[in-house]
Image (cartoon, rainbow, N blue to C red; front, side, top):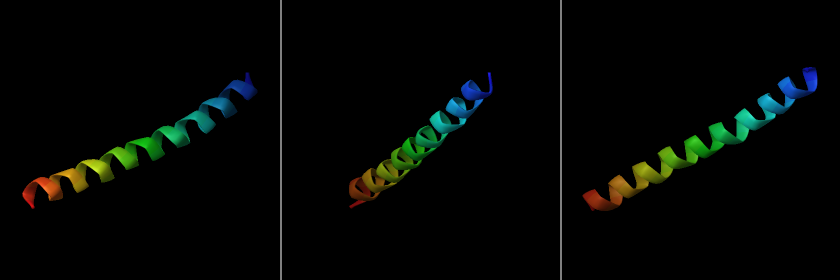
Length: 35
């Protein structure tokens, strides 16, 4: 089962990176809209 736990942790990191990218993209879009 330990292998599964490690896989889970490895999976979480890219998800956090994706969430960060979404936030950055959203803030950039808001700035573009505000112009």
